[in-house]
Every structure is written in structure tokens, then in C-alpha cells.
Amino acid sequence: MDNTTRIPPQVEIVIPVYNEAAELEASVLRLRAYLLTTFPFSSRITIADNASTDATWEVARRLRRELAEVEAIHLEQKGRGRALKAAWSASDATVLAYMDVDLSTDLDALLPLVAPLLSGHSCLAIGTRLARSARVSRGPKRELISRSYNQILRRVLRVRFSDAQCGFKAIRADRARLLLPLVEDDGWFFDTELLALAERAGMRIHEVPVDWTDDPDSRVEIVPTAVADLRGVCRLLKSFALRRLPLAELRAGAGVAPVIHLNRPERNPRDYHAA
Image (cartoon, rainbow, N blue to C red):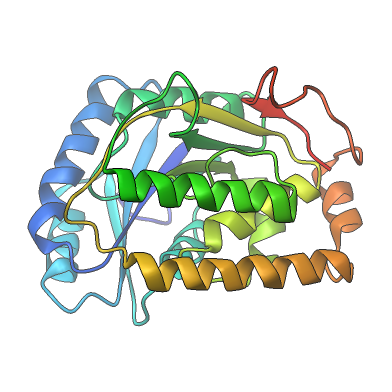
């Protein structure tokens, strides 16, 4: 269908990829089959190739040609945050989501992720591997790093969301238009920065416990990523302390009253406003 006449989907799911030629087609076909047979909302899959050096872009272009529900974009520079900014900024969907190409998160969590956003109940939604009802299969090293990082966020930035880095998130497009211009990070810290800004602006965040299986072939370099994330935390802390961010304007643009707490996190961590 011609892009100028197509009907905008309710949900666009972006898959950021870097050198994933071997896995990309199988994952896209699996996700597409799920969306066509199970998912009740209109949807589009967008492959966001950020500077792959293998055949990833060729695979993405072929899938775009062959499948009406699939789009693809190519970026010349790496960075998950950069890929998501580009894809989400160009989208005409009502809700913007993303998931990792390995589909580590059970796809049955997709509907609970996006439904509160389509209904207008929440502004953002995240999958969490750290809720009691989540079922997670991963090694002790990654588990320790994840829990330690999120503990740092709670203590230093005083955030209330439970899992910053789970590769399974969604945001209403109108909220994305407010937040994306303020997010500086183009890498893995993008998720944390987006969520922290949203929370400071009083936007409601919905959490979905997920079933999640670790990918042993993950492209994430743990130590450099952890160092970059900690630098990002320090930068955000300084920005919040110096009040460099237009939080009042964000609240006004989102129609959110300032500093409203609906529930204490220990009672109901899945749904809240945050200061």
C-alpha cells in the first residue's frame, strides 16, 4: 500500500537491530504471525537497522518488500536509543512500542503492555522482570547486574519504576513527542532517561510482569554499557538538581497535575503517577 494513503496503525512495534541477519527473519515472521492471529489491534512492525555491517539491512529490505505489515529504516550510526528516536519520531501510530529482536519476552505480554495506553489509562508501559510474578531465565551475573542497577536508580534518582532496561516498552505517541526531544542518550541509557523524565513530569507508568528468557548471544557488552549507564545517571542527577529540564512545561503539555501519588509502590507497583 502507498505510504501516503495507508491507514495509521494503532500500534507500531519497533525492533532495533545491529548485525542480526541470522535471527531477524525468523523473529519478524514469528511476531507477525502472532499479531495477525492473536493481537486485537491494528499494527505495524518496523525494523530499525542501526549501522549493521552484515546482511541485516538486506534482510530487512526484503521483508519490507514481501510483507505488507513490515517497514524498515536504516541508520548510519549505532545506538538503540538513536534507532528508537528515529523510528518513533517518524511514526503515525497511536502507541509506539519496541522489543528486542530475540523476542526474549513472551509475546502474550504485548496486549497487557499496550492496552492501558490505547485506553488512555497510562502514558507509558514497561515490562518488568523484577516483579514477584515475573518468570525469568537468566544467569546469576546478569541477574545481579540488573538488580544492582535498578537499586542504584531507586536510591540515586529516586525513581519508582522497577526495571529500567527490559527490552519491552511502549509509549503513547503524544507523550513521545513531548519527551523524545529532551532525551540526550542515543545508546542503552535511553530507556532509563526516558522513564526518569516521564516520571518527573508526573506521567502515569504501567508495569507488566513478564516471562523472559535470556539470550546467550546478546550483543550487549556488559561492562562498557554499565559504565555508560552510570555516567548517564550522574548527568541526569545533575540536571534534576540544577532544574535544567522543563518539567513544568512537560506536565502542562501532558495535562498532568504535579506531584500526585496514586499508590505506594510496595502496594501496587504496576500503576502510578510520580513526582
